[in-house]
Image (cartoon, rainbow, N blue to C red):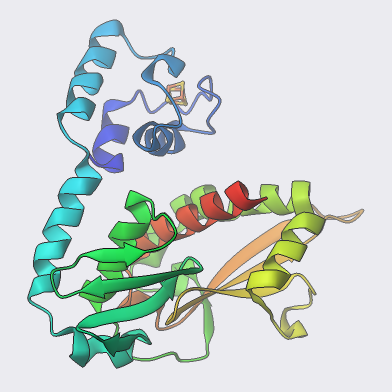
Length: 253
Ligand code: SF4
Protein backbone atom coordinates (compact mmCIF):
# COMPACT_ATOMS: atom_id res chain seq x y z
CA UNK A 1 0.00 0.00 0.00
CA UNK A 2 1.44 3.38 -0.92
CA UNK A 3 0.89 6.61 1.09
CA UNK A 4 -1.96 7.82 -1.10
CA UNK A 5 -3.82 4.50 -0.93
CA UNK A 6 -3.38 4.48 2.83
CA UNK A 7 -4.50 8.11 3.11
CA UNK A 8 -7.72 7.22 1.25
CA UNK A 9 -8.51 4.66 3.94
CA UNK A 10 -8.11 7.21 6.76
CA UNK A 11 -10.99 9.41 8.02
CA UNK A 12 -9.39 12.47 6.33
CA UNK A 13 -10.77 14.88 8.92
CA UNK A 14 -7.27 16.18 9.74
CA UNK A 15 -8.32 16.48 13.39
CA UNK A 16 -4.75 16.06 14.69
CA UNK A 17 -5.65 13.75 17.57
CA UNK A 18 -2.92 11.35 16.45
CA UNK A 19 -0.38 14.12 17.19
CA UNK A 20 0.28 14.47 13.45
CA UNK A 21 -0.79 17.65 11.72
CA UNK A 22 -3.18 15.88 9.38
CA UNK A 23 -4.11 12.50 7.95
CA UNK A 24 -1.48 12.58 5.17
CA UNK A 25 1.51 12.98 7.53
CA UNK A 26 -0.08 10.24 9.65
CA UNK A 27 -0.11 7.96 6.58
CA UNK A 28 3.59 8.65 5.99
CA UNK A 29 4.42 8.11 9.67
CA UNK A 30 2.50 4.85 9.71
CA UNK A 31 4.33 3.52 6.66
CA UNK A 32 7.67 4.55 8.16
CA UNK A 33 6.79 2.73 11.38
CA UNK A 34 6.83 6.01 13.32
CA UNK A 35 3.13 5.89 14.23
CA UNK A 36 0.66 3.17 15.13
CA UNK A 37 -2.90 2.64 13.92
CA UNK A 38 -4.01 2.90 17.53
CA UNK A 39 -2.98 6.58 17.47
CA UNK A 40 -5.98 7.42 15.26
CA UNK A 41 -8.98 7.52 17.55
CA UNK A 42 -11.31 8.22 14.62
CA UNK A 43 -10.94 4.81 12.99
CA UNK A 44 -13.46 2.09 13.86
CA UNK A 45 -12.08 -1.25 14.99
CA UNK A 46 -13.01 -2.95 11.68
CA UNK A 47 -11.30 -0.18 9.71
CA UNK A 48 -8.13 -0.62 11.75
CA UNK A 49 -8.21 -4.36 11.12
CA UNK A 50 -8.70 -3.80 7.38
CA UNK A 51 -5.74 -1.38 7.18
CA UNK A 52 -3.53 -3.59 9.34
CA UNK A 53 -4.23 -6.55 7.03
CA UNK A 54 -3.23 -4.52 3.95
CA UNK A 55 -0.12 -3.18 5.65
CA UNK A 56 1.16 -6.61 6.60
CA UNK A 57 0.70 -8.07 3.12
CA UNK A 58 3.98 -6.58 1.90
CA UNK A 59 6.19 -3.56 2.18
CA UNK A 60 5.13 -1.70 -0.98
CA UNK A 61 8.50 0.07 -1.05
CA UNK A 62 10.39 -3.21 -1.42
CA UNK A 63 7.99 -4.16 -4.18
CA UNK A 64 8.66 -0.87 -5.97
CA UNK A 65 12.43 -1.24 -5.46
CA UNK A 66 12.30 -4.68 -7.11
CA UNK A 67 10.42 -3.23 -10.09
CA UNK A 68 12.84 -0.34 -10.35
CA UNK A 69 15.80 -2.74 -10.33
CA UNK A 70 14.21 -4.52 -13.29
CA UNK A 71 13.99 -1.16 -15.11
CA UNK A 72 17.64 -0.36 -14.33
CA UNK A 73 18.75 -3.63 -15.99
CA UNK A 74 17.56 -2.22 -19.34
CA UNK A 75 19.66 0.94 -19.01
CA UNK A 76 23.27 1.33 -20.22
CA UNK A 77 24.74 2.92 -17.13
CA UNK A 78 27.85 4.17 -18.94
CA UNK A 79 25.68 6.19 -21.34
CA UNK A 80 23.83 8.11 -18.64
CA UNK A 81 26.64 8.66 -16.16
CA UNK A 82 27.41 12.14 -17.47
CA UNK A 83 23.79 13.30 -17.23
CA UNK A 84 23.68 12.11 -13.64
CA UNK A 85 26.98 13.69 -12.64
CA UNK A 86 28.16 10.20 -11.73
CA UNK A 87 31.43 8.39 -12.31
CA UNK A 88 31.32 5.12 -14.23
CA UNK A 89 33.88 2.45 -13.45
CA UNK A 90 33.95 -1.31 -12.84
CA UNK A 91 30.53 -1.59 -14.48
CA UNK A 92 28.98 0.62 -11.81
CA UNK A 93 27.82 4.17 -11.30
CA UNK A 94 29.39 5.97 -8.35
CA UNK A 95 27.93 9.15 -6.89
CA UNK A 96 26.88 10.80 -3.67
CA UNK A 97 23.32 10.84 -2.40
CA UNK A 98 22.16 12.27 0.92
CA UNK A 99 25.86 12.76 1.73
CA UNK A 100 26.57 9.04 1.31
CA UNK A 101 28.84 7.42 -1.29
CA UNK A 102 26.79 4.95 -3.30
CA UNK A 103 27.54 2.56 -6.14
CA UNK A 104 24.88 1.08 -8.37
CA UNK A 105 25.53 -1.93 -10.59
CA UNK A 106 23.91 -3.05 -13.83
CA UNK A 107 21.39 -5.21 -11.97
CA UNK A 108 20.25 -2.17 -9.97
CA UNK A 109 22.02 -3.41 -6.85
CA UNK A 110 23.02 -0.56 -4.52
CA UNK A 111 26.08 -0.52 -2.30
CA UNK A 112 26.90 2.03 0.36
CA UNK A 113 29.03 1.92 3.49
CA UNK A 114 26.42 3.98 5.35
CA UNK A 115 22.92 2.62 5.70
CA UNK A 116 20.31 3.74 3.19
CA UNK A 117 16.63 3.76 4.10
CA UNK A 118 14.15 2.12 1.69
CA UNK A 119 13.09 5.67 0.68
CA UNK A 120 16.69 6.56 -0.19
CA UNK A 121 17.11 3.33 -2.21
CA UNK A 122 13.92 4.12 -4.08
CA UNK A 123 15.13 7.64 -4.83
CA UNK A 124 18.55 6.40 -6.00
CA UNK A 125 16.86 4.08 -8.48
CA UNK A 126 14.42 6.76 -9.64
CA UNK A 127 17.37 9.12 -10.16
CA UNK A 128 18.95 6.60 -12.52
CA UNK A 129 15.72 5.54 -14.20
CA UNK A 130 14.53 9.10 -14.87
CA UNK A 131 18.01 9.92 -16.10
CA UNK A 132 17.74 13.70 -16.33
CA UNK A 133 18.50 15.15 -19.73
CA UNK A 134 18.84 18.86 -19.51
CA UNK A 135 21.80 19.55 -17.21
CA UNK A 136 21.72 22.21 -14.53
CA UNK A 137 20.22 25.52 -15.63
CA UNK A 138 21.48 27.61 -12.70
CA UNK A 139 17.98 29.09 -12.37
CA UNK A 140 16.30 28.63 -8.98
CA UNK A 141 12.55 27.97 -9.10
CA UNK A 142 9.82 27.11 -6.61
CA UNK A 143 8.30 23.65 -6.41
CA UNK A 144 5.05 24.96 -7.91
CA UNK A 145 6.96 26.27 -10.94
CA UNK A 146 8.15 22.78 -11.86
CA UNK A 147 6.09 20.59 -14.20
CA UNK A 148 2.91 19.55 -12.33
CA UNK A 149 3.96 21.53 -9.25
CA UNK A 150 0.79 23.60 -8.98
CA UNK A 151 -1.22 20.44 -8.22
CA UNK A 152 1.09 19.51 -5.34
CA UNK A 153 1.66 23.00 -3.99
CA UNK A 154 -0.27 22.53 -0.73
CA UNK A 155 1.25 19.13 -0.06
CA UNK A 156 4.73 20.55 -0.61
CA UNK A 157 4.11 23.40 1.83
CA UNK A 158 2.63 21.08 4.44
CA UNK A 159 5.09 18.17 4.13
CA UNK A 160 8.30 20.03 3.35
CA UNK A 161 8.40 23.78 3.97
CA UNK A 162 6.42 23.90 7.21
CA UNK A 163 8.45 21.13 8.92
CA UNK A 164 11.68 22.82 7.76
CA UNK A 165 10.49 26.14 9.17
CA UNK A 166 9.85 24.46 12.53
CA UNK A 167 13.29 22.87 12.46
CA UNK A 168 14.93 26.25 11.83
CA UNK A 169 12.77 27.98 14.46
CA UNK A 170 13.81 25.47 17.12
CA UNK A 171 17.43 24.71 16.14
CA UNK A 172 18.73 27.62 14.07
CA UNK A 173 22.24 27.65 15.52
CA UNK A 174 22.75 23.90 15.50
CA UNK A 175 21.22 23.52 12.06
CA UNK A 176 23.36 26.39 10.67
CA UNK A 177 26.51 24.73 12.00
CA UNK A 178 25.47 21.42 10.53
CA UNK A 179 24.62 22.86 7.12
CA UNK A 180 27.85 24.89 7.09
CA UNK A 181 29.66 21.55 7.44
CA UNK A 182 27.93 19.78 4.55
CA UNK A 183 26.44 22.43 2.25
CA UNK A 184 27.51 25.63 0.57
CA UNK A 185 26.22 28.99 1.75
CA UNK A 186 24.43 30.74 -1.07
CA UNK A 187 25.40 34.31 -2.04
CA UNK A 188 23.17 36.86 -0.36
CA UNK A 189 20.87 37.37 -3.35
CA UNK A 190 17.80 36.27 -1.39
CA UNK A 191 18.08 38.86 1.41
CA UNK A 192 18.91 36.33 4.08
CA UNK A 193 22.23 34.96 5.26
CA UNK A 194 20.44 31.71 6.11
CA UNK A 195 20.69 30.24 2.63
CA UNK A 196 22.32 26.93 1.84
CA UNK A 197 22.61 24.78 -1.28
CA UNK A 198 22.41 21.08 -0.44
CA UNK A 199 23.37 18.60 -3.17
CA UNK A 200 21.07 15.70 -2.40
CA UNK A 201 22.19 14.10 -5.69
CA UNK A 202 24.99 15.41 -7.93
CA UNK A 203 22.49 17.02 -10.32
CA UNK A 204 19.89 17.86 -7.72
CA UNK A 205 20.88 20.91 -5.70
CA UNK A 206 18.24 22.22 -3.32
CA UNK A 207 18.30 25.75 -1.98
CA UNK A 208 17.06 26.12 1.60
CA UNK A 209 16.16 29.68 2.63
CA UNK A 210 15.13 30.79 6.10
CA UNK A 211 14.12 34.20 7.43
CA UNK A 212 13.88 34.33 11.25
CA UNK A 213 10.82 35.94 12.86
CA UNK A 214 10.88 39.64 13.69
CA UNK A 215 8.51 42.02 15.44
CA UNK A 216 6.24 42.23 12.42
CA UNK A 217 6.51 38.90 10.66
CA UNK A 218 6.60 35.20 11.47
CA UNK A 219 9.58 33.20 10.33
CA UNK A 220 9.56 32.07 6.75
CA UNK A 221 11.05 29.21 4.74
CA UNK A 222 11.32 28.67 1.02
CA UNK A 223 12.76 25.66 -0.73
CA UNK A 224 13.92 26.16 -4.30
CA UNK A 225 15.13 23.79 -6.98
CA UNK A 226 17.20 24.16 -10.10
CA UNK A 227 14.70 24.47 -12.95
CA UNK A 228 16.02 21.17 -14.38
CA UNK A 229 14.89 19.26 -11.24
CA UNK A 230 11.75 17.90 -12.91
CA UNK A 231 13.86 16.01 -15.45
CA UNK A 232 15.40 14.02 -12.57
CA UNK A 233 12.33 13.56 -10.34
CA UNK A 234 8.65 14.32 -10.73
CA UNK A 235 7.08 16.75 -8.27
CA UNK A 236 5.71 13.98 -6.07
CA UNK A 237 9.09 12.22 -5.87
CA UNK A 238 10.60 15.59 -4.93
CA UNK A 239 8.24 15.76 -1.95
CA UNK A 240 9.40 12.29 -0.81
CA UNK A 241 12.98 13.39 -1.35
CA UNK A 242 12.68 16.55 0.77
CA UNK A 243 10.79 14.67 3.51
CA UNK A 244 13.63 12.13 3.58
CA UNK A 245 16.22 14.91 3.64
CA UNK A 246 14.48 16.53 6.61
CA UNK A 247 14.26 13.20 8.43
CA UNK A 248 17.98 12.68 7.83
CA UNK A 249 18.82 16.20 9.04
CA UNK A 250 16.62 15.83 12.12
CA UNK A 251 18.31 12.54 13.01
CA UNK A 252 21.73 14.22 12.86
CA UNK A 253 20.81 17.15 15.12
S1 SF4 B 1 -6.38 11.14 14.34
FE1 SF4 B 1 -6.96 10.05 12.47
S2 SF4 B 1 -8.43 11.43 11.50
FE2 SF4 B 1 -7.33 12.65 12.99
S3 SF4 B 1 -5.60 13.55 11.83
FE3 SF4 B 1 -4.87 11.67 12.75
S4 SF4 B 1 -5.17 10.15 11.15
FE4 SF4 B 1 -6.44 11.89 10.59
